[in-house]
Image 1 (tube, rainbow, N blue to C red):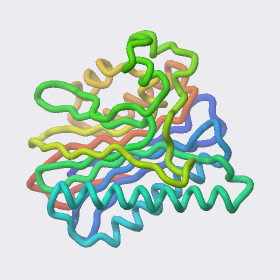
Image 2 (cartoon, rainbow, N blue to C red):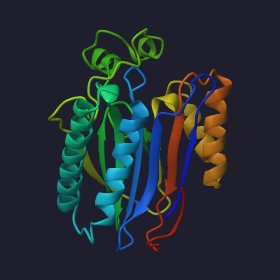
Image 3 (cartoon, rainbow, N blue to C red):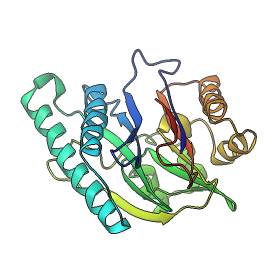
Image 4 (cartoon, helix red, strand yellow):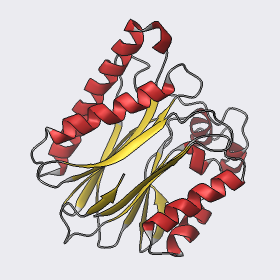
Length: 253
């Protein structure tokens, strides 16, 4: 599995509230995570870093997973436990009160992947039939689009487009959206924060992914374009290519 994690502060923010990483358990099974600390809350960087660190610890302690059902149960339980840890930390530390984070996780086991997410950080899959957004944003504008109150084009410029309806750590109990999908050789996956997708359209992401086989170059071009268009938010992404013949493979994070 070839993977790259890239993160950038952007052009406006004074610090980076995103976090993420690529991790392997003792069996060489792959997990990728992106977390975007809530910009409107205190200590967003604390929340996102806690989410990534705790998830890495749990994955390191996981010896082996075999089936989609087992993977889905594992990630749901991990998210519930991490949510409680972040929520309790916020309650016990005044400077962190109200903090939260989005999260999107992909676990790859043999020829399938399990995706879990909360918030508006996304997972895309690039296969033979093009680029497809796998996750549904837990956001105000997406809820308005789904209810027919606004169009997708309206959502792009909506004044409240960055309002999320669910975030990790903001409530004592929270459930993630979880699904499992098959993988084909050479499929590419993109995890990213809204700092990228607010500035770069899906068609442009697809074109950048098609223009190169170098994952580092692809990620850098995406971040560069988001920054050229203002870079008001932190920009983070993980891009990886499924290679069934590789176990632990190659990572850079």
